[in-house]
Image 1 (spheres, one colour):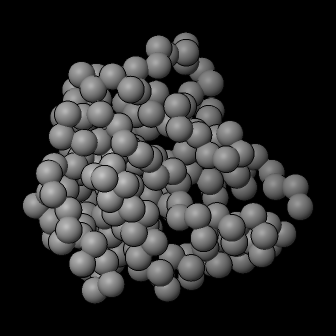
Image 2: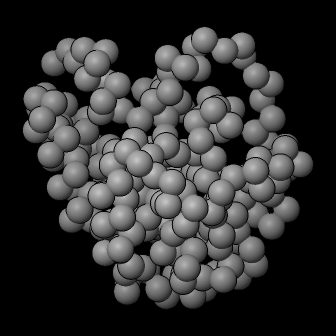
Length: 207
């Protein structure tokens, strides 16, 4: 079914209107020096959580109720070295609020993983360089960096299994049913596939 621009603005965590008004930027997204600087310009998740106003109850509840699930601890325990998660996110994004709190628990569990959050203005180049399959710059976009701040992989917007639901069963739902269905999926998954995807990126980069 055809969704209106307003519906897309509500349901998709995309910064297209703001980005379209700005001049194109140079692609520096593979430059470790620039990524190091951008990473350290960001804030830790605790500060982001304290400052989040939109969807605040869900931010607080997802982090407060979340944990690193037992089936992922063995993989997390195998991590060596240092890995940085550079997360481009905004508080009002339904996908950001359903992914970052669980990654924060991974960071709390493993001394080898840390995370900083930048907004969609500072992280514009990251989103532009790593668009969704349908061509959108979206939040969250989470760039995984090694200890030299070299990018080794990226998590874009939402887990693949949820994206499959969005593209199939969710495609023809009303806006209300779509939102309800998406949050039901996230609540049932409780971060397993998001954290698992990031752990898989780290594991592949460690080989």
